[in-house]
Length: 168
Image 1 (spheres, rainbow, N blue to C red):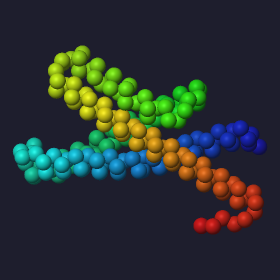
Image 2 (image 1 turned 90 degrees about the vertical axis):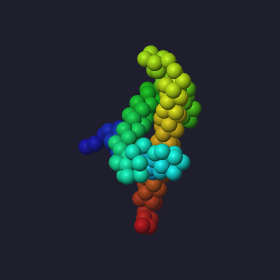
Image 3 (image 1 turned 180 degrees about the horizontal axis):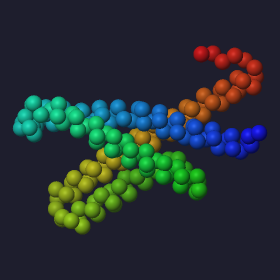
Image 4 (image 1 turned 30 degrees about the vertical axis):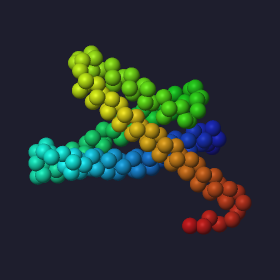
């Protein structure tokens, strides 16, 4: 016989994994599209693009590993914050709000350890902004997918308890 607490924990884990899967399925194509758009903009607006016009497909190939990297980073940060939220409750809106100041503090401090210059500062600023926006998008996608899965689960449970057939 299965204890109800174990059953609830198993469903919470399934909802957790399924919500991350759904959020990643939407997040990854968004990142690929963003990188592809940035590459196209580089070739449209730069009078001397790197490598010439024949180099554009090669740059598109590099968009995939970058998208995988940023998607994995967003998943890791979100999982860590959810584990922290399990131990210490905090509002769900708090991580996207404090994300940009933390990323700026970390990524602006790094260039001063190695190289002090305006170029390093600007690159760190853009990287921190990109990581912050990427994390916020993933956090919101995860939040919406988790809410969607829980609502579908509740409606299925409600229809099963009332005995009405589920419309597909």
